[in-house]
Length: 130
Image 1 (spheres, rainbow, N blue to C red):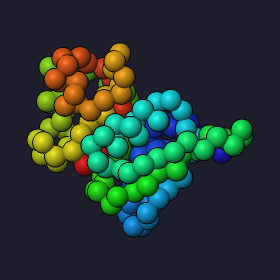
Image 2 (image 1 turned 90 degrees about the horizontal axis):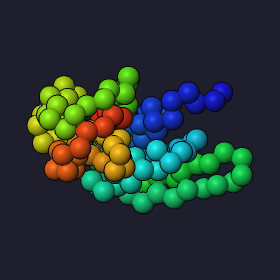
Image 3 (image 1 turned 60 degrees about the vertical axis):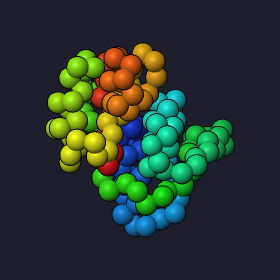
Image 4 (image 1 turned 90 degrees about the vertical axis):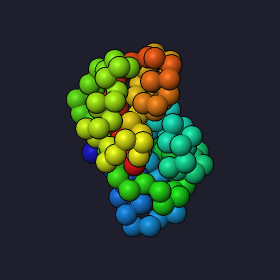
């Protein structure tokens, strides 16, 4: 069965494997957006190292889990947000201000809402993690 939403599949796989206290998981299929989202999660310490496995059939990513994800998920529909509105979205999706991150896809790449507010750029909300 093909995945219809790759980002939702990524967050669901990470969350389910974290719940089961796994040390690593296999995410498939993988796209550029998925890899950039994993880089943002790694930058904030939610996941460890990850590597792309391209076996010419279906690209996969092997991700090391650190046990730091309490909850994560994709945001649908992918709301367009201005940088001034990110604080309101943070209060809506995260348990407290300063706890967790929103993942935002911008013209400058995939980044957290904190980076987007510092750089004063908006984008589309992809997901959240805390």
